[in-house]
Amino acid sequence: MMNTNITNFRKNIFTLLEQTIKYNEPVNISTKEGNAVVISEEDYNGLMETLYLSSIPKQRETIIEGLHTPLDECLQENEIEW
Image (tube, rainbow, N blue to C red; front, side, top):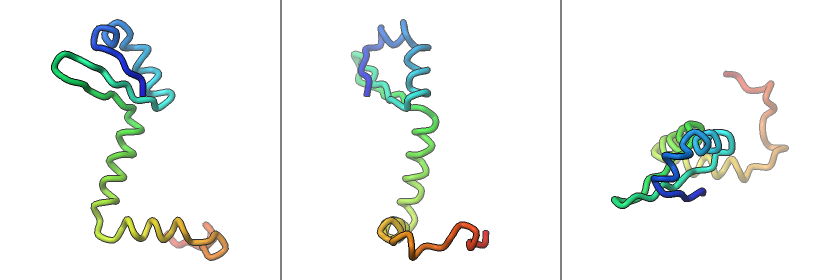
């Protein structure tokens, strides 16, 4: 995570936002009143999706179970009916 103060953030806002978007590197901005973090829209959407999936009862356990399933026990992509 990149750290900067509000003055430097204002001076370099375009460059810092471009870096955040391109490299998904959050920026921590410190001010006298506290800190704020800027993240890319892609990272934000990922966090929201994770929170949503975690809020579904037993979904977390199902995902972990799937991660531990050997590939040879998984269905081929063309065998899945959408």
